[in-house]
Length: 273
Length: 113
Image (tube, rainbow over all chains, first blue to last red; front, side):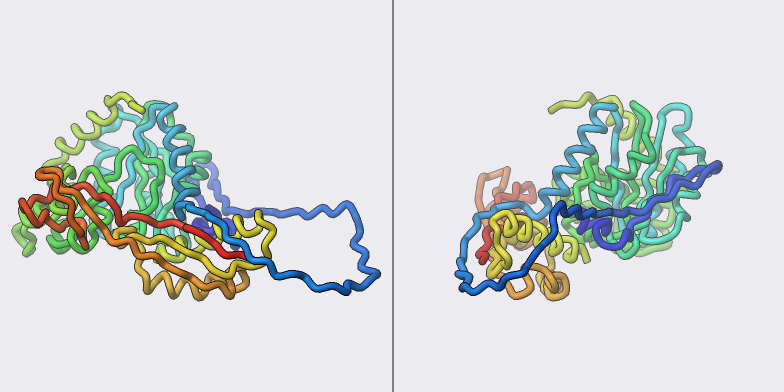
C-alpha cells in the first residue's frame, strides 16, 4: 500500500501525535539495503540471442486487495480491544470537527474517546480536539485526497486507543475519494449540512451508498437557506435504502441526543463474525 | 484524484506478478472495471500516462473491460441494468435494490515477456 500513502516515494505522509509534553512526529521512510556477497565479473562477452518469450498470467486480483487486507487487520485489532471505530466522511465545511468537539465534551466521563484527524495540511483540527482533553493523532496526507488503511495502521500504533473506547476517524474533507477506501471501521458516517445542496446524495452517491448513518448538520440555519430537508432525506434513501438519518445542530444542540443514543447503541453491540 | 492511488496499485500488482514470472516487461494488461466502481476513466487515463513511466508497464497496451452495472429489486425480484445507485426498479418503482455487478475493479490478466 506504499503507493497509496506515499511512504514508498518520499515520505509525504506525516503523523503527529498531539501531546503537550512532547511533539511526536514521524514520516514514512523505507531503507532498502542491498547486500551482494559476491563480485560481478563480466570479463567475457555474450554471443547468443535471447529468445523473446511471451507468457499470459491470469492475475484476477482486486486492485484494492492490499488496502482491504490491511483494513481487515485494523478491524481485527479494533474487535480484539472492543474499540468502536467510526469513519466520518463529508465535504469540507459540513461541521465534522464541530460535531466531534461537541460530542467529546458532552459525553466526557461516560465514554472514552480517541481521534484520528485526516487533513492534507495543518494540525488545526487536531489542536481543537486536543483542547477537549482527548487523545488525538493528526495525519497529514500532503497531496493525498483520502485516508487509507495503511495510514490508520500507523496512526493507531502511535495513538494506542484504550480498550472499550470509541475511535473517531475524521477523514479528509472530500465526498469522492474516501468512499473507495475501507479503513477497518465498524461504521461509516456521512455528514452533510443544510448549507449544501439537497441533491448532494445524488451527486456523490458512492459515499452515501457505502455509509450506514447520515447526519444532517446545521439544522438551526434551515430558516435562512433554500434547503429542502425532506428532499435531501428522500435523495439519500434513494441511493441507500438502509441509511439511517439523524438531523442535528451542533450550535443549538437539537438532535444531538439522537446521535449520542446511536453511539451508545453501537458501543453496546456485541461483535459478531 | 484517487485514480492515481488506483493506478499505482494496478502497476504494483502487475509488476509483482511479472517479476515473479521472471519477465522483464508487461506487454499487455487486462482490467475489469465496473461502471459503479467509483473510477473516473478520464482521470485514470491521465494518471496512467504519468504513473507507468519508468515501470515494467511503460510500453504496455491497456485493455479495459467495462462491466455494466446490474441490480435486483428486493421487492419484486426483477433484475435490471442500472446507471446509478438511485435508479428505481423499472417494474415496481422501488429503490430497495441489491447491486449484482458493476463494482469490479481488478487486474484480470497480463501478457509478459
